[in-house]
Image (tube, rainbow, N blue to C red; front, side):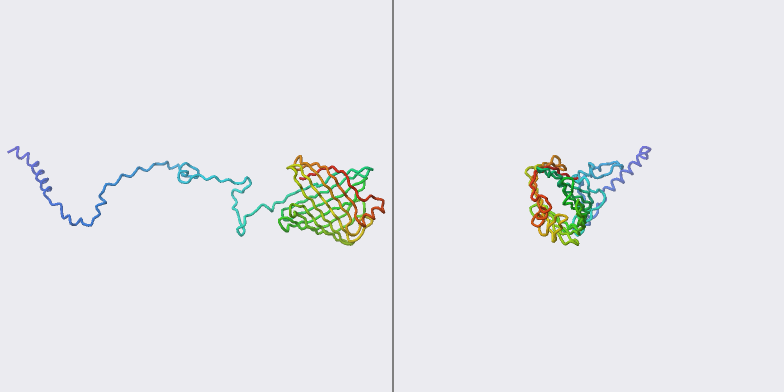
Length: 305
């Protein structure tokens, strides 16, 4: 009897378990319409890679290169880095407002002639400004036996009127061993068709009007050996005997120069030059005991900075 009382709790537990097993599972009809696909096993998610909080994805890093390959961008040395680029009407800006200082000595030469009539000739320009506006100084002349003649010096303002031509206005002063003559100047200068350097100038003063035509052309025999024909013509409306000027076509100065550019800024040359008064000016020169046509062997140097 005592043993049956000890086994009573165990029997009670076994009977309760059996009763739960005999309970019905319920109505399966209520499960109609349920999506049984949700009960399919799902793959376990991959563990996310842990990155230290201090590490950030920055342009150029290893993580950034995996998503976006690096692109090489090349810029000019003088390109602004921070300033934004501004366009006007879709036109890109150009560097045409900078101011420059430039000088060129086109002719600095000795013209040899037998009989002691050799002479020194110079012709040079100097300007300061931008591609559109410039201030010019021009000078040319010839020295023979210590006397200067054909001295012409100009101070001009220049304005670009096209990609190849400038309009110039200012004053011209004829200063040499003869009497001084002032002129008002209006000229056009530039690069004509087929790369001809040309200048056409008109002058006005109390003694009438005058005109000057200048032209030259560079023929590249090699990159450094250059042949240059050149010509200058002057015409006047009135004669000026004190300066040896005749009305009409008054004088010509021309030459054929062969230069070699040792450096781009320094080029010695040899040439054959010819200068002569024409028509009425020739008669004035003969009356004053001066020679007329003069063809001479010439050597000189051309330079610029």
